[in-house]
Amino acid sequence: MTMPVISRISVQKHNKERYSVFIDSAKGEEYAFSVDEDVLIKYQLKKGMELDDLSVTEMLYQDDIRKAYNLAINYLARRMRSEEEIREHLRQKEVDETVIQEAVHRLYEYKFLNDHEFASAFVRTQMNSADKGPELIKAELKKKGIKQQIIIEAIAEYPLEAQIEKAVYLGSKFAAKNSRDSSKILKQKLEQHLLRKGYPFQVINIAMEEIIVEKQEDLEMDALKYQGDKLLKKHANLTGSEFRRKIKQGLFNKGFSFDLIDKYLNSLELE
Image (cartoon, rainbow, N blue to C red):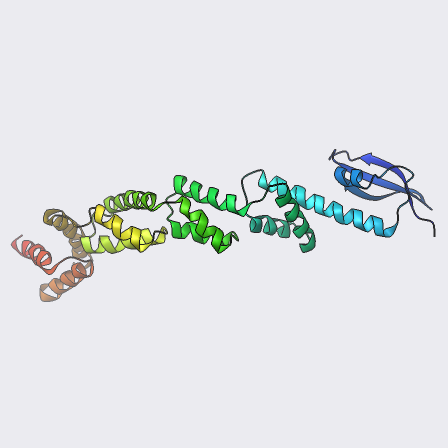
């Protein structure tokens, strides 16, 4: 059986780094396949060269790797990526797993991939540009496929002093925004807020000592009055002991002390 012979190789119109290979056939010249420039050079493709099925299969496999590699490079051009992010991007492009493995190997070979550097850079960026605590950052790194040991090493970029400073700043803003809550409720909300932001209890406990949560009695009474006035409207249809009981229960649930609640209710009776 006569093997096909390359009749022509031409650069593609819309991609100057890819070449179309044509062969002579019984029907005349026909398109056979296309390859990247690197593959063309590697296999020294030229006019008049005979092609066998095994060589073509190997060429096309290497071309698939090159295409996957180029997809990954374009994806990396926007920002650093983890290995798992690259793999997932290529899977979404329906690249075969064996091809992905080879493309990833090549990315490491040319130092375009490094999960250690990625994790350290990610921690520094989040520390400087976001309000996230270390636990949230660690969870995000895990989601990006970073190994646990690498995460542990990278999070060292976020020292305890910086965590406390950020937690105090965020906590103070939160406390100011929620000044109409009782000291008790504000403390609970603040702890939950910092936990959701990814700060560990060790940092939260230190930060809470620096954030003004316990209010002076007059400020606590201002907060109580604000909450109490809302309850007055809610229970305006009630009277007597039932009215007093509902107001008292509502304010207690909001974290105010019985002494301040009684002062507030007594002031209402005087009015």
